Amino acid sequence: MANDFVRAPPDDPLMTLAYAWSFVQPIENPSRELIAGIAERPDRDRFSFFKAGIWGMEGYTDWPTSSWLELAMSPEGDFRVLWKSGIADTIELPSTYLSDWDNAPDAEAALEKLSKRMDESGRPMIGVCGTERIQHANGRWRERPIVWGFDLGKSDKQ
Image 1 (cartoon, one colour):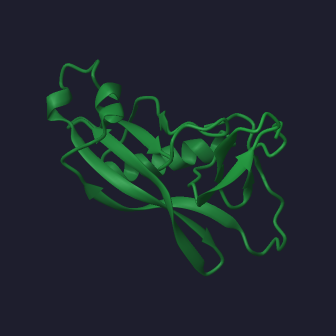
Image 2 (cartoon, one colour):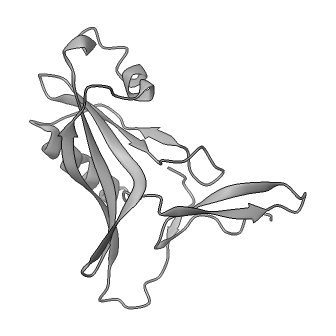
Image 3 (cartoon, one colour):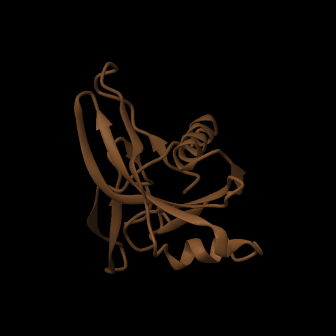
């Protein structure tokens, strides 16, 4: 994900906004990006694949985002996770992001481990809540992702 996004200051410090994965489900047809991410492994035909949606939460309210996670996991517990934004590449966010290899006993533990690692690195999980159409100074239009609670570089030249 982009290095320059910054968490927006909360209006009410008691209401914390966060994004999290939920509903881990096995899948039979992972994305080509995830398949490419495990291509180096000789045991890739033994991997299991999972998908989890990303939800936004604040207080007692939650909402779905267009983003999700795909997980490839070997029988030994080695895994990689692919974050998918749900939209095309933009200046602010890539459409996908592939994690490094790690190890966990099961799919949910793998996603917990990834979430913790992301939080500790200062790059928490996010989900795209929508897009807005913006026009640059040169007259060209493009879509900019909206991630509630984060400023994704609104200072770019428009």
